[in-house]
Amino acid sequence: MSLISTLARLEAVRTGRAQPATTVRHRHLSDRPLVLVPLVTAGEIGAPLGALVGTDRDAPRLLAVPQPRDRDLRFAFLAELADAVLPHIDACAEVVEAAERTEADPETGKRVKVEVELCADAAQVIVPSRAGVDLIRLLGRSTRFRRTAEQDPEAPFPAPPRVPLLGRWLTHYGERARVPGSSLLLAMTDLLGRHWATGQSTLEDQHLGALLAWIDPPEGASGAEAALRAELARDAEGQLLCPPAGPATDPAFDNHLLGPAIERYDRARTALAAAEDGLEADERYGAVSAAEREIRALVLSRTRPTWDAVWHGLDLLRRLPAGAHVADRWTRDRWSFTGHRDRIVSGEPPQPRRDDAVTAANKLATREREQARLEAQEALDDPLVMAGRRLAGEAFAGEVTDVVMAYGEGRRPSPRPLVTVRTDDRPQLAERGKVYRSLGGKPQAAEFVEEAGEGLLVLRIVDKMGRGREPEPGSVPEKGDLVCFTLFEHEQRGGAKLPDPEATPWTHGGPPGETAAVPEAPDPLTEEDVL
Image (tube, rainbow, N blue to C red; front, top):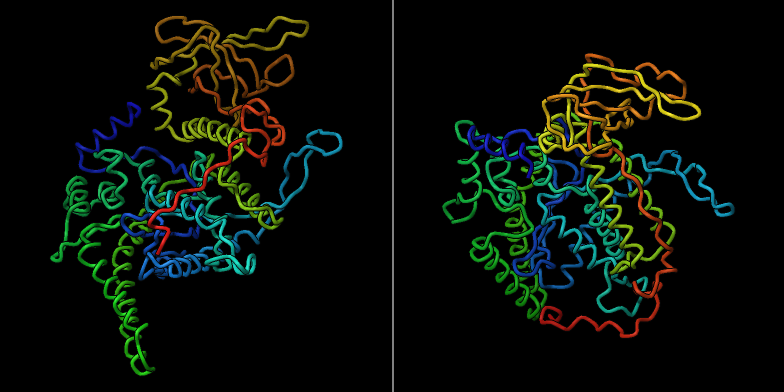
């Protein structure tokens, strides 16, 4: 945690209200995001209990599983979830625009620009908490390999037609959520925690109700009091007034309300199966329907407060202006969305359970590069974030007190002006260390020459001045200008080129598909695998 974040949390404790951690919004928010509030059965995270899903805050779609341990009812839930999610994804995938992309020519190997399709927008999914992101990833892994009756007529327990497709999309969103700065799949607690600093721990910030209580407390109450009430307050029946943001449920709800309701549903369904004539079956079917409606009402009572809280968080975030680099990061999300759409249309198989060595290395390198890029862009977009980097000695700002024109040595001397900056910051500069400033959206590099006195730093500008003997107007700071230089690069360079997956060396598992010396043992059979 940076020093400025610590100061903001202390200020939140003093004032009783969350303090802004940024001055702009650093994540993209779609006009019509798909909000998903999931619930799962306690002790068995792979057994869905229900969900609220939709793009209209006033008309969410309720999905519920009256008996989460029933395989058929689970698949029915996943089929309903696919019917709610996939049309929104398809609508975004159908609207495209022309874009240019650099690709290697198959004949010459040279990099050339080609015109391709790019989805004009991508479907954004928002869940209440970080645990919801993990559940999305789990649902994708458990459904993308399912076989349908059309694909394999002899498959045991065939999945509904669109469930495997849903699993592929959920897997892609789960993987994309691991890329820093991506906005395809977002957790509301992480979004709010990035833009506000509260007076509680980061672990407590994962409680959406408590986090919102600090950011927007009710009139007459402090953030700490409102957060404590959101975490602990219960009604006359002993149920939490602010239910957990899912996918977990409260034990009191499980034991006193949900458990008995599921038992009544099981008894009613058993009685229906034992009916001896049509009249008796009709009477008992009504009992089953009533028990199912009771469970749906219970699921709605736990998910609707969280649903409203997510939309309230979106309202708070929309008040912040978007950062300058947010659109660029969203464009990369759109490229990712378009690429996955193309892989599905071309008939490629689902994502493998485990990546080969080259793919895993590429993913790791991409995440490291995007993390460094995100940190740099947030600092460039936001003076408050840049202040934290300045306190850490990773940047400095000040006034230009002197500019001396100088030239480099060589056959054709290039301008290398010396700029003196007065600053109160204490950057961790090394001899001939590189520093950078943003010039027209592009990084301009300079070298640290010497310290000319207390708070006086002499820098040598080395690029972005044009090709003439004299620097282009505006490319060199003038006396009296306020400037800000960073010790970190603004753009990240690519790493070393990795071999093709087919050329994976034996030290890293060999080429994909190659038979291992010792075959992997299947997963052991557990009690949960047998109904």
